[in-house]
Amino acid sequence: MKTPVCDYEGSDYRTRFWENQGREYEDLTERIAINRMMPPTGDTLIEIGAGFGRLADEYRGYKRVVLMDYSSTLLAEAREHLGDDPKFIYVAADWYKMPFVDNLFDTVTQVRTIHHAADVPALFKQLNRIIRPNGNYILEFANKLNLKAILRYWLGRQDWNPFNHDPIEFVELNFDFHPTYIKEELTKANFKHGRILTTSHFRIGFLKRTIPTGFLVWLDSVASLTGPLWQLTPSVFVHSVPQKSGGSATIASVDAFFACPETGEPLTEIDGKLTNSKGQTWEKKNGIYDFKNPVS
Ligand SMILES: C[S@@+](CC[C@H](N)C(=O)[O-])C[C@H]1O[C@@H](n2cnc3c(N)ncnc32)[C@H](O)[C@@H]1O
Image 1 (cartoon, rainbow, N blue to C red):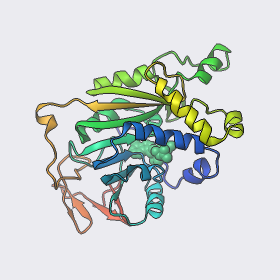
Image 2 (cartoon, protein in one colour):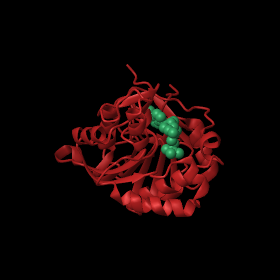
Image 3 (cartoon, rainbow, N blue to C red):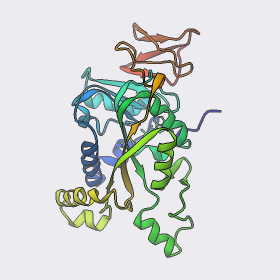
């Protein structure tokens, strides 16, 4: 059975959530965290759930940048914003069925999306498969153990317990995670988790309205360094490295890139079409590879 997906097709996410919505502080603190964790240059990077490409400019040090998302309309917005820069590759796909060969990516980033994952172990398994040995996985997750949730729980204004390690689905297909749960699942999926940064320490309307954004972002960037000690902010970044050996560590050949989301076999592109051995074909339409719906 297909794992349910939170579908943003046709969504106004960019204008409703980001544009002129007073979230410059969150946006800037996330960029700082990514840049602290991500090697600035490399061969191939993928952002999982890249949406409209909000963070794409941070990845320009990489030779190839894959923006992958389930929503082709958000990817079309990314493409419109980034133009025809050949560095960027747009892929509409489901993160439970990633259409890439094993060990392809130097760096994987994932920001503000894992809260839509109903099956975290399946997602981590796919990610471990596509990241190179000693590559980087930079994950931001929504932390259920945040100060606001703790206070609300203690005051009896929230029925779920933020100290419990299980994910909490507060709205359908929207989960908050306990840091311990994320670390345990990363370990089970053969990742070694390392550096932790906390962000959005000052995500409080009054502070954001009264303190100049640049100063608040700077304060956050300092407070962020306490991440290894405690994680009580609504947003947490964790850096992990996949542990691989033997056959699972074989690097993809230079030409291999896409793989069939169903069978895993490598796919070769001919005239914008990719066909597997069973005759199923996926195609590139308007600059976006569509691996959600085979054309035949
Ligand atoms: C809240 S948006 C975040 C977008 C972007 N990361 C950002 O921070 O601006 C969540 C994104 O996750 C994507 N998403 C949700 N489930 C997905 C899945 N199963 N496979 C791929 N993308 C998915 C959605 O389409 C959406 O663009």
